[in-house]
Length: 227
Image (cartoon, rainbow, N blue to C red):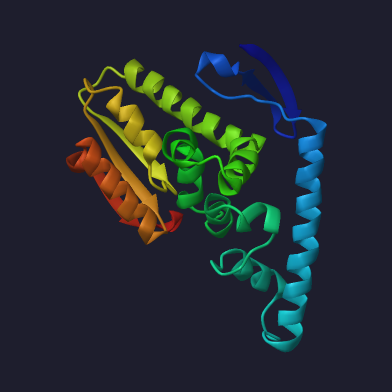
């Protein structure tokens, strides 16, 4: 583990850099050719989507803000941004339409367990491996989950009390909390989950029941203002 400090307006912050192999993480660096293809696809999507959004703004949704039109386009299951990206692979498409939600995180978190084994050696499979499999952002998200689980387990094991209480704000599916609790069966851990998304709360309930922790969770549908 490497340690260093960064300076901010509020003072110095200590930063720890973890080697991926220390927590079972990933760190596969991509080639210049891969990055060039990513940039070309990104520029293609930018031009394509912006052109379509401007047409919609001009002729269909004149009162809608351009940013809102782009947002809705991105989450429309019938909309595709790039032939070489989300049109070739249903998983790539799902990552785009479910962006900024627990569903996209779940797809990234469980790529190796749920997605990769289902892929075939066809164009769709290769497109999925090329984008979701190799992108450093997906690797970082997967690593973050592993680090959070490890940190929670370490924190739980330091507590010498009959009950541990944890509050998860914008909890999503709460998979990190649930998996950490599974690794600490000797502790009585009670959790309160808060999220504004009904589907996220429902998914968390399902995962908690599957893990046998239904009686240890309380679910709150709402924003941070409920705190």
